[in-house]
Length: 212
Image 1 (tube, rainbow, N blue to C red):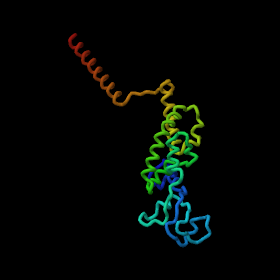
Image 2 (image 1 turned 135 degrees about the vertical axis):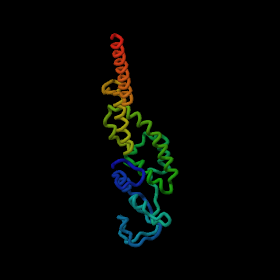
Image 3 (image 1 turned 90 degrees about the vertical axis):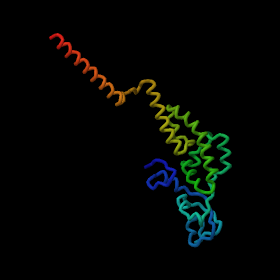
Image 4 (image 1 turned 180 degrees about the horizontal axis):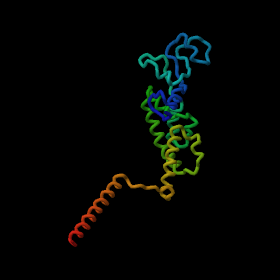
């Protein structure tokens, strides 16, 4: 139920937290009696082009053909940051920029900057997964999982990867060797023993008859 999702999931806590992120946007027209949406203003109405921040789930529920608000891509997903990611993606502290960096980005791909944003997310993840692999191989450093450089999904991958690496290392050192024959091999051995026992039984009966 807590697993991350890239599609709306009513029962996912992670999905709820991602869609609660407040996204910068602007009013596309004057909106009466909606001034309460902007806590920094005391006016009852929202003016045309008025800047404010609204939860992602609210912006996602708009009529696509006639929206009231235009979404503005957060700075961490703009071309300026794209150049930073290109320079050295592993140096960037994604966890400090946004705890749910990838999940939020995937949700934002449904809006105008979809193709460019998807490409940036892919390139960033591709570069960072190399460093993440090195971290997983260094399981002795337990505090790495709390490092601000890792965002939520990366931390989950780190936990799974480091645990798998440790299990493999233990297996190589025969610390946890418990290899069992498969059911198919076990059944084959049983049949082979039955055949051998049958042959031995037939041979003994034949020898008894010949002696008589």
